[in-house]
Length: 413
Image (cartoon, rainbow, N blue to C red):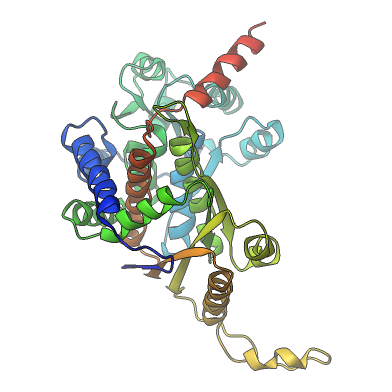
């Protein structure tokens, strides 16, 4: 289960109640009208699991993900978190960026006869993805007219150019709902299909997301509304939202959060004003030695969300050894690294609080499929609420599209 604790000052007033009520009504209308579809993915995506029951993937040992941004970040987040706790999970390779060195190194790792290839692009024409797809086909000598077609899965919008490609070659195809944006799509076929084949319990992940989503719409998660309102009210003086995650396995989740937060909320509102909250993802205890000084004594323009894992399910103790010259650290001998990293988080949060920086905490009792699903739903719901309060279109990305237009123009010269 997840525990949510807040340490920022927040007192409701009739005016704030109106703000929260308006935001809640708005997201309810988004869900009920089906204008925005991610709310229903925890139940709608169960259909993909049914389809996969009829596809034989027992011989597969390796998955190759070809996609970028919302087409890969969520997959990596779940994979990184659950891999240490999941037996017999298949290897996953990622081809995302157009960096020629990374592409070349990853190509050498592909074992074609043991691999499935997942080409993921909502629009179907993402330049990085289509360019890498061509490269993989050429390097691996994939015969799309023969048995190799059974190795390739296409995940895209219905009717996209990539969908046309899939149908032309009779490839496996799964569609992303039209009303689900890429950065909100991890619980659609984008994440469900490859991660289920890899060996993860996607049914439990969907259940965790559904449980939190239903609880929210039943009025039992008031803390999400309160945090959204706090972020909105303090947006000008606390324009930076820091996610400080105390586990290495949470690093890819922080990257997923950065895209979700930045691309959804950094917009021009209906009155022509630039709004948004700058997301920064940190990993504790490592970034205590880099960024913490700036949080505590730098400009007071930040708030911090801490994520901790109560039980890492790994019993690793610090040896009872005394070393000459560093005897002062012997007090920790015999204690576990689990206790150490959580004590570091507690001490860091206390120091941040004493510096009058607004904080809150998400605590996982342990890493589990249901907890991961709930955490994904939490951040998506929070993003939608803040977007309503900012009066922006949370689900478009005109700034990103402008860059694509310029790129296409420049490369076409």
